[in-house]
Length: 184
Image 1: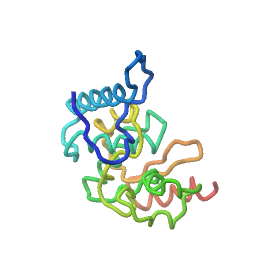
Image 2: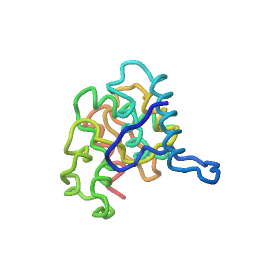
Image 3: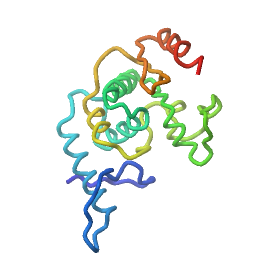
Image 4: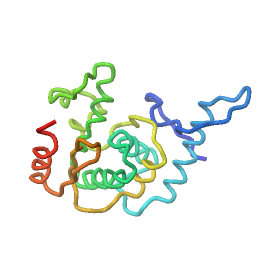
């Protein structure tokens, strides 16, 4: 079993699941232990050539995927965009990282000024992954982080139905913003 070490908030370090607990057991210890096992197994079976140094980074990536979409079919595509952006030293620029960074100061909708919020978790300001997970992760997100869909997409925009429009170029991305976000 891989022991997960962390000094930040515990986001991401517990496996979301249903547990049968016996008297005297700790649901937190069990959930933490199981997350460590799932993470270790996923890391051992990951795709080749990921720009991730360790399983902890994969967990952080999975947490970004988890918060970006609930659509299981899109998670590998989102992971692929993040992986390509990491490979190109681009900022990930994912809104959930800003929402997490803002914490109790977050108010919907996310505003342009929020993207400038100074925090190591804000992927609009900082290149690379945040220092730790921003949420717990499900199996689909963990798998997607280890097995991203490979394409040329570098951008995505959420559509009204909750799915995403992917784009290979910045111009396609801007076109998708006009198409899917301007009339919301």
